[in-house]
Length: 314
Image (cartoon, rainbow, N blue to C red; front, side, top):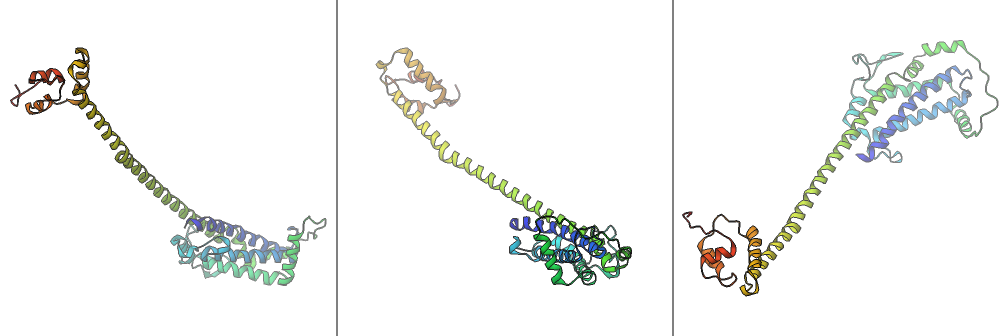
């Protein structure tokens, strides 16, 4: 989906330019007054090229085109696009109950696609009625494109007043000119907005997925750190404390003076014996490992700094 979004949106936007170019060139071809600085044959070739390019780009948007980078056409993936293109509606109008075409009131628009086909037919009618032979027009337009410098002389400007009336009387020409900023252009604009909505939705979906993956990554790091590093380190530390405590309780009493014994007792009292009560059985077990092999429970109390309480709390 993401691969198609950029090329599709670009092609959909390009259709707006191509449709307007066809409208402008049709007007200039009919008037043929010299203001465009192009001959009739050049105008014919330019209009024909833009029409064929509009057909190619429109087909690529709908059906896909590998050369344009559109892997999957909008017909196969975008419901909003298909509603605009193929359903019997004209939502680009404020009053979509009347979808008749200007200049061709007998025709009804069955979605944007039918309007596009009517536009193609109208431009082809203009070419057939006001243009020259196709080969002559194509050759003249190619020479116009290959020209590297502007000519020093242009066709003379001649105003044909009778041709201005054709802009309002010819139904096909009227439809083409109205499409410059009318139904066709507004319909293309809605299609671009539909692709913008698709882009926003796709990017939001990707953003949510990336945040989910990042959260899973953080959780994994925390679990691994706690399970493999913190717990193992803490366990190893406790083992070292226990071994140190066992070693210190086995030091002979004559190896330490009174001050050193007191310091040792205070050191282990704050971390090892935070119990509210110590059973007599535990003290008897501990007695054998204390310095000087204390013989009484009182000696044990004095050695480890504990108050011995019986089970009745006395």
